[in-house]
Length: 74
Image (cartoon, rainbow, N blue to C red; front, side, top):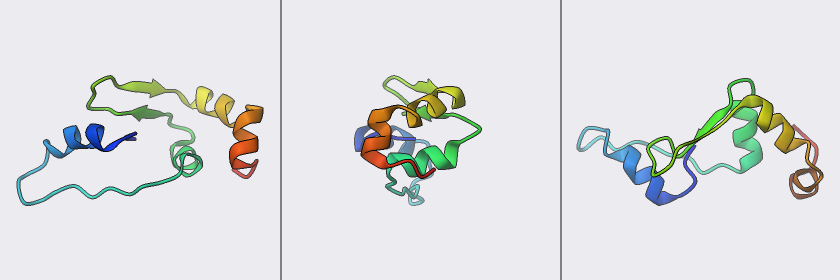
């Protein structure tokens, strides 16, 4: 999962010239639903990659502030 365009550019350098990668912008709750059971890595190509294990994702979605911001639908 990339958090900004600068982090995404590092990923693009891994692809063949003329064949750019495709990206989709998603809301965080949608990303969580996709990554459930696996965890996620934020900005895997740097500058600092962050691993968020599935257990931490579950804790995040159960925090009251998260529920107020995004609701309780999962």
